[in-house]
Amino acid sequence: MSRQSGRIRVGLIGEGIGASRTPAMHEAEGKAQGLDYSYRLIDTAGMERPDLRALLADAEAKGFAGVNVTHPFKQQVLSHVTERAPETERVGASNTVLFTARGRTAHNTDYLGFLHAFRSELGEKPKSRVLLLGAGGAGRAVGLALAEAGVCHLLIRDSNAAAAERLAADIETQFPDAKAETIAETDLAGVRPDGIVNATPVGMVRHPGMPIARGLLEHRPWVADIVYFPLETELLKAAREVGCATMSGRGMAVMQAVKAFALFTGVEADPDRMAGTFDSFDVGGHAS
Image 1 (cartoon, helix red, strand yellow):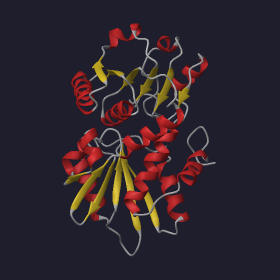
Image 2 (spheres, helix red, strand yellow; image 1 turned 135 degrees about the horizontal axis):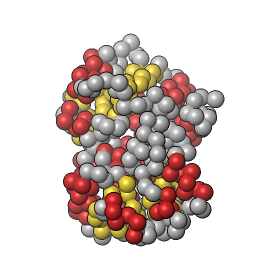
Image 3 (cartoon, helix red, strand yellow; image 1 turned 120 degrees about the vertical axis):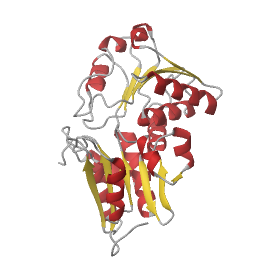
């Protein structure tokens, strides 16, 4: 790993990430581990034409050990690495890039983080038929994790029909016992899934609103949202109001951070301690 004078520097590249809890989780864990560890936000909001290649090169030149990558760069970043970990090949997207002597290595801790959270919080719920909203970098990780978790039939909705079709095909190739297909916006009203998962940016601070109509929640499916700032999105609030079981983005956010910390430092993180840091934030996303 790239280190300067024993200091470990890492960061997060993404758009509209000012409310992210990830830096606090990483830095608190680094301090607890006795490491000289810093985590910087590299926010592309306001940049006219963000240049991911240049941002990666700048971080590497400054001695960063690596970076996390979030919306909208999780697929694009694969064009700027030299090696890909197995789970990254499976998903076709990356949220963690290490800078090594051999070059840049892409990993995907979103996949493992969501899988762990889903099994822990909703694993016993019916999951024969699930509606997935989003087939981008995060959506791919979530869709494949849902198939691994035992979802039998996955309906995928994305405004990018080609991306949704690619994800459906990849799921059926990697999980032959699962069925995956795309669904048009106009057909959502007739869907009665066991669960709904939001893997789009809709609901984030910079992308307020709901990714589906409230009426789709009336038959009380369980609802999961990977957005975690704010922790209670409009979707989850509406779902709870009509009696749905819900899963926030907390579990995925914590576990992906736990796994990314280990990759950056070579030291295993304490999940409970990182979760405690996450929970120390108030509803607005600010440390309390």
